[in-house]
Length: 464
Image 1 (cartoon, helix red, strand yellow):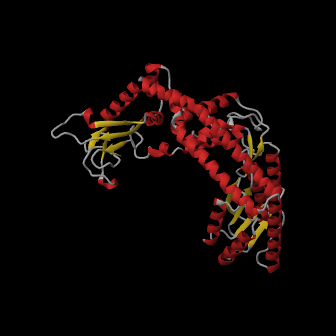
Image 2: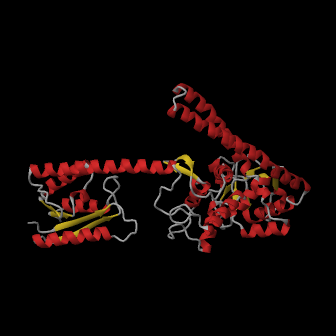
Image 3: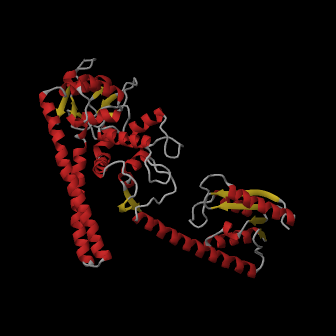
């Protein structure tokens, strides 16, 4: 009889988080220990964790460590398949038990005598049966999920943001939020700004837990489900039976906007409006954002980043100068003409999106011709696919290049509206606005003996 036995409990899925399954297992195991008069040292529980997937089971690993340390000399489980469903893990368990001298093991559904070859043989058979059962269940589940996806039916158990439980009906309050986020991102605001705003407003996620993060919001905005498309293993397989929240063209614009490399320039310091815009007039190097010795925000030419170390300019007055120049420029006839031209780009974008749709449809038909109907050879399929995928990449690059221009078409009316938007919207939107009309801010060396900000040092290079 063991001097200190362990109880191990596990359940693969606990959707409600109530731990009812593992509590029932523990109760049965304790009743068995009492009948056998085995003293229980500790109970190890892995809730909502499958033994088949190979995911780490923290309590199980801790139990193995305690067995090796000699703290446990007996194990009680509800059934052997609660302990293992993979033969490799079973053999590891045998090895640890052998080294530690553990021979006492009991299960509610039947004993396994680890001290005999017959007992171990029986355990291996049970493990192989459990593995086969898991494989069969997994195969049936995958096939069922694929069938549901191709029929356009929901496949997940979790409620998607924007939809009611079951995924077939929209939740209007969240629909408005998704459309709001899409509009703000297309207008130049960053995901971070939208997430911070939603967290301040107390907007709940689909689970009601945690805070909004960039990755979560991006995944929602770009999810094919939100545009009414059904997906299986990352591939769009048909039209969903649920209403679309965003149209596919909007999602393509979002994809282009969120992939625009110019949006990733804000990496040095999140308080610097002109990070990535400023250049040294002497050597041409890009200025870096770095405070002075007196802790004032500044832009400087740094030899560390390939510069000449010969220019420093205080950030606050420079940023104010650029901001006011942008405000004035947006009221000039020349820039208004550029805005009207940008509004006309919607036709170009629509043409690009239509071309993209056609190429994607051709690519899908090509795959069916080869894989399903065998109308073309593999060599013909590969040759045609390369050309079509290159056209798709080109269309996406053109969309990315035009994504910044959409900021101009969504500007508030009047100078007052623009200034109000500047104060209320985030840093990402301000940078997007500047990047739409200004290409570079070239900073000249300071005049000898000058100790005040000199606007003459600054040369703005306009895009139009």
